[in-house]
Image (cartoon, rainbow, N blue to C red; front, side, top):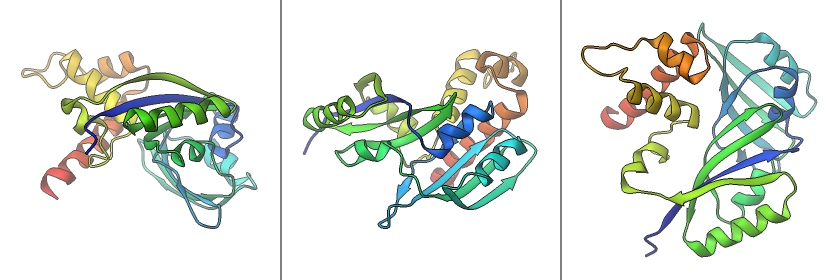
Length: 212
């Protein structure tokens, strides 16, 4: 049994995937689950973004996007669709990278995931070096206390994890509470409604595991 598990974060720029392209036209941050590559080469996408009908319009006009479905709430829009354009992240998945979360903004993507063992890490790093547009941001050992933070069981996106961590460090969960949602949102650089939506989604994922 291999005991060592590493966390790696990569930045992808220059990938011509539809979500990356969309963020060059609409100034939003997209939080995406790991893309699911089908046997026919098409990709199943599931992602959320702040309310903005322009994003749906841009994706709907993209010839590589099919079967776009949007669920709208006041705090966030949830999207599901099929993409005919595989993302370069699958190049890393094929050599052992376990994608935990992806975030698209400014025409690129930041992905976070796990690598089991140094041998697999070497393979992932070699593939990243051969693939134009992929840069390693950081890599570090997965500690026991981080298992719940990035593990698939919780199904937290990197944005949700960041929001929980910043809120906790600022004292948002202290009793009595002295920090407001506006304070945390300002620290994160997002709107209050976006922060509260991330918080609710994160809580739903955690409670679903604990009590589901």
